Image (cartoon, rainbow, N blue to C red; front, side, top):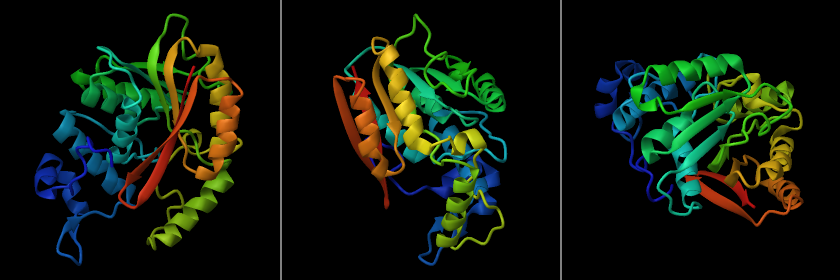
Length: 281
């Protein structure tokens, strides 16, 4: 984890369960005598998120619909901390989150942890409505601006407006190619983790969150193509890349737009390794 990530220590459930009493039913003592959760259970993770967001950022309300992605907060903050290292020192930083989903997690963390001015885009109207509900019920999130992307075929176009400037664009792209791909890979994940569940999409996610025709490689290539139109309006474009084998083709697509610089930033959270690609003009 990034050295500045406050979530490096084990969770203190004695503190967290009084903050969110619903979390207590998911806490158990493992064979080492430590209190923990089944982190593959999205219901447990959602209740943990509620407690963490209230403890660290004083959010009075945060919730997502049953079938939407439930993000792990420490990993999401790690992405922003590493992306922040790319930025030159400025008094005010503006962030654009592409595909914020119903959870709004990057703008929440950007606003509360970094005091950034955050804008969030999303193509799904129901997700926008849920994000709006989160903003309205938390005074400390009132500066977040939500924009609905009207066209599924576009990523940055119609979201970045003529007078905008963003120091940083972040994105957690859809990682599957189609619903069948998502279904099969989630079944393998459930099997590998030896979970006792009949829920195929055990980790949640609506169609627009989970898949895009061609998968994340096609999505980020499209994002790179569109980024060239906004080279004077964005400091750094970034996107998480779930499959490292996609990096070569994605980097080649970015280089075709003749950026000033391209970086691949590797991250680690426990045993999990992840990465994002960043480019600027």
